[in-house]
Length: 77
Image 1 (cartoon, rainbow, N blue to C red):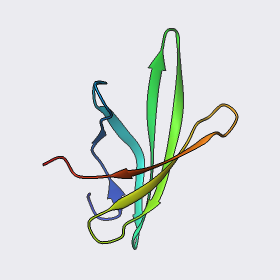
Image 2: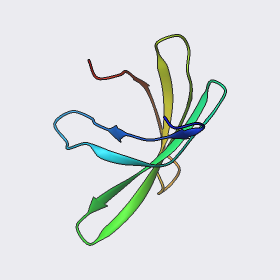
Image 3: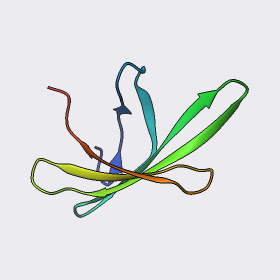
């Protein structure tokens, strides 16, 4: 994090890490985008959450249909 700008990558399972874009922090609230490439197009997944101690519960919103998934992010040890 640089000031109020969140930077880094998101990794999930066996997939390669993807860079965070448009990352921002306001108090304990966090929001960022991750662009996923599939075949000949790209789509942006939007993450939002609020830091609680060492845990960061997140809501991932998919671009098509607005489907949402809940998860908890942790720093890589």
